[in-house]
Length: 246
Length: 383
Image (cartoon, rainbow over all chains, first blue to last red):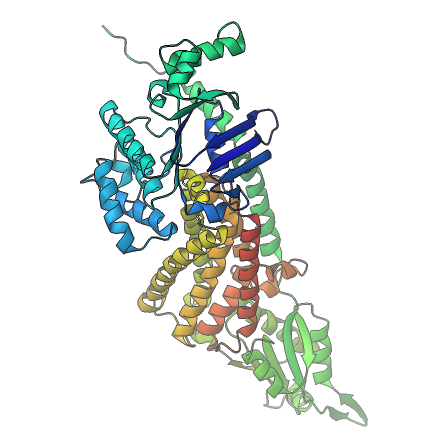
């Protein structure tokens, strides 16, 4: 479903290897969480996987298609909620969803029921015709998720998907993600909130653009003799740096 | 008791220092502040410093000459030839010869600014006048009438030549105007280029701001992940902005024609169409330029970079014929030059689309060029 080999991204000035030899393999219906500190390269990975950013070297395959070469083919089948809200502040929620829906080739007949469903799931009922600029931070985040999922994609890339969303709704969202994955949706999300990543099927720990370890949450906790994913992350960091990290 | 918050030079200095640091970081603003004034001063200085020169005119010299007998000696007078020779030596005008009829139709179609007819009895009448007879030599002039400074340049050159030929004799210039001449008010004559300028500046500015908003809103990276191609995106911008431009053109014409009642001798629909057509050129130019603007500030700076040189070089302030000769070729590179041709043509001269076809073709080529440039510089990925 998603596969990378020796993926490298060096930004133009050449000083930073934002992604440094990444090998990733995610299968259909999986919820995979990339976790790591700010600046560890999570967003760069997502941007390359979605075709928005050209890799420096290495290969990417998404839905059996080479990226970025066939990104426009794949584009209708993936949904992306970037780290920034990336919805139009001066459009209403409905107008945003309809715009993105049209980009993905939806017509009114397909759009309307899907939009109603998503508005209910994301607890945005009553906000359909509110300008996005007047929504709270958490609502904007949900608006962005709505626009990413509106066309029923096969893969959802959710960058810092649940930042700014309150714990109750976050729990609800995770249940929703779970139900979507059961029906075949693959979800790749990033987070720097370690505890919520524990709900994913598998976790990839990213540091300085490299995947330092990955596995099921329980297996990882057992491996590092940790009680939480956060502890796993801290222990890994200590091991890496030697004398402690951050 | 809290102390009153007194004026602090330190805080004031901090703000000034911070703003200067920000400007220093923003190379483009810095360049604008240094390069723009220099550029504008140079362009306007050269453009306005020129004198009317090489105005194309046609002279039909029918003067058959006159053999004057004074006492026993006789002299052959060919005053018409002398007038033509003096005109040829005058850098204000560029003289062609031909029949008066050719000249008149040349003025009508914009090839010549004036046609001059020297009658067959010019030498004879001039001689008789000098002998004190009650006759007045006359020369017929057919003038364009839409460019007062060119008309007066031609008339000045002609009067000078006649005076130098026949002394300070009285003579009459029979002036006819192709496109109304004295009937045009100052507003009539200047409005075509004012419309062209407003369209240049406004359409560029609005278009640049609209497109740049996508960049600053952070939605562009999101669009890169959708099936939307760069071509679709740029065409989408173009269509929306063109619809906006149609409204702008309509408002300008409603006020110009409706409120001020300026002359439109040609077809109003053609005028509207030309306006929209020229607006499209500016929309496409903006689509191209927006690839280089990172934010609204830079977008706002780009509009005057195009608009001011256009104002100076397109013939708006001074007719192109009055620009220094070495600058005139640059005028032909400026879209607004052709807008002036179109708007003046329709409004003052009553031209139809056939007469203006060259301007339309050039603008179409420019529009294609802008779109090709836009497509070759557009980004459809992050970098």
